[in-house]
Length: 464
Image (cartoon, rainbow, N blue to C red):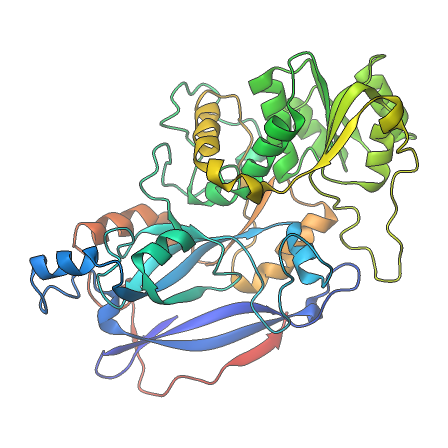
């Protein structure tokens, strides 16, 4: 909620954020986290897109904007939070490609936010009030203030999304639960189901991981038989669709953990053969039947452990194994010993290669990859990519995270920061009003202020 003090000069916004307070041992538990609520005081004038019209001329403002050293504070309101398996690694103190989240600090996450206020118009050229941005700096919280920021710094930390072609500004649905309605679309400029949340899924790190891992590391050929673990997951489902419908690979096999997921994979044409690894007597034999006598040419592994071992038993000569993740190992307790494939010598016998990668190594190529993905969606080659957004509210972070490790999700899990659907549904309306200088100027951007005549409350913490 938003409150205004008696003379309307200050806005007090309630911020919620998730803190990591203990490093999990095994599967994360609710008491590994705390929900912190704080009051953030912001001057009312910051919310008005016309805030500087009475204090400086247009010429003066243009001069200020051109000064790269001019700074401003930006207030970001979170719309969507990306929920990823990698979060489990960030909670650990083990060495990895990113440093661990510090205990007592906000949980790391990719987010999509709206710029709702700014201390001056110094950054308006790129980030006016109402613009939508993607970033890695906000984390799991409802508001964030980027302090004392120059335009060059803002460009490094924020990616503006609202002027990208091909994005329809509507609330994303769980379109990956059924046949997608855009299968007849022939225009890359008008995919029907893309929303800003898609920049955390198919057009975000998830989709980019699939893109670069498969195409750059795996280098698939049309004659290949491809095996994908976690094929009903966010990354695996995109990998399978690129392999099958973009490259045109001969056979695409996917593994998943339920009959419902396997039916979804096959009925939507994501894979040719889906295998429920939980019910088959032998995963290795099931892969052998699906792959045929020549074996598997390319393995894209998101799971590790038993799956990796089964895949190594079915390699074709000269095969490639792409190591993307090992979700089966992420929640191993500290007292347990991680298991590796006992049959790794098959790599030698089959003259195969096994390569790991990190998507951040390809940052300079993100733009071209996103353009490719938008085009393939428009052409109907990638049909199933919608976000699993059943969870809403920062306080729902834990059940959203747990859905990844319990296997109850299909596709990309995105946490809606707001429980009020209208906040997201009105993205386009608010953005256009603000950019045209028609913002309501009422101090909070939503027109529903309550009078607030008391000091802000002290921060509070509660268990999830």
